[in-house]
Length: 321
Image (cartoon, rainbow, N blue to C red; front, side, top):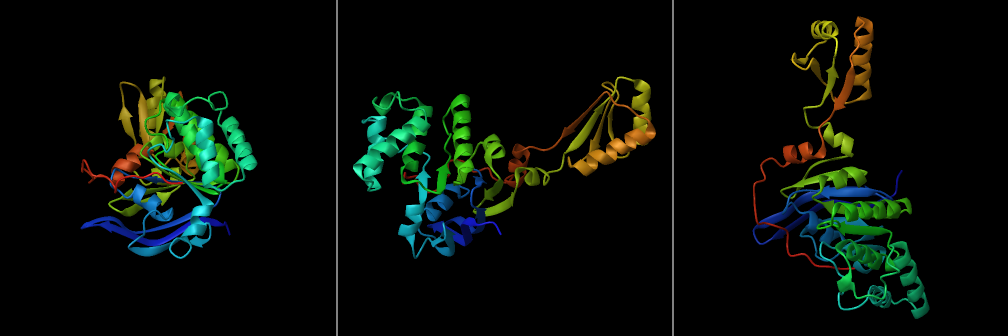
């Protein structure tokens, strides 16, 4: 059985008369990326804050790295790293000084702290900028430094709360590669994001939070199959083959002008094989076949369709290590 890095059972949290988490369960295997998706106010950041021991849940239980978040919070903190939405980098000091400050906070011996700082600055391509004030760094450089600081304590579980917010596409892709490298090294990542492409690219499993509950959970492909609208598109250049396919294939939508057919499909291998066998048996040859499946945008909007709130978020965000 796969080791679980994080488990949660029935987590609940309210602020005043507002219920932010309404009983959520999580099972996150070690060495994977687990993404929490949801609109503002869905409970993503509150979940991270509870699991990282920054706030206490009103009800429920959770274990992180095998330690109970209520009875052994110090052990949990020793095993994790947290990078919040807003950078914890001190702009008034250099990148190297930021790293050494984190080493001191982790009580590393001076020589070990310097070695660790140098190794991480090199790993995140920040060596040339190490002696420059962090205020001079670009947004992507600051985010890399932020995560490098998180890694000073060598955590095996990392919480990344919307780590690429505000980054340009190139910096975002760089951050994705950093996350993939961390997971390849055996680190578990709990990622919150509002970028659906980001979850699709990185996550082994995704949970969609809506009104404090998990509306759906699964792999990206499993979630996409929850939403109708998948289809196989056949395009013909031969009008005769098009007319034959129109008469032969069931449940089709036709477009006579472009000589294309749409056949409902969940995008599975079985569906595709069945269609190809049907075409071969009938001697029908299409010029082009494409498979179209709903994307995570479709899933997100379908599962959170009644969310029209504006201006509401979880409790104010704080940075923590």
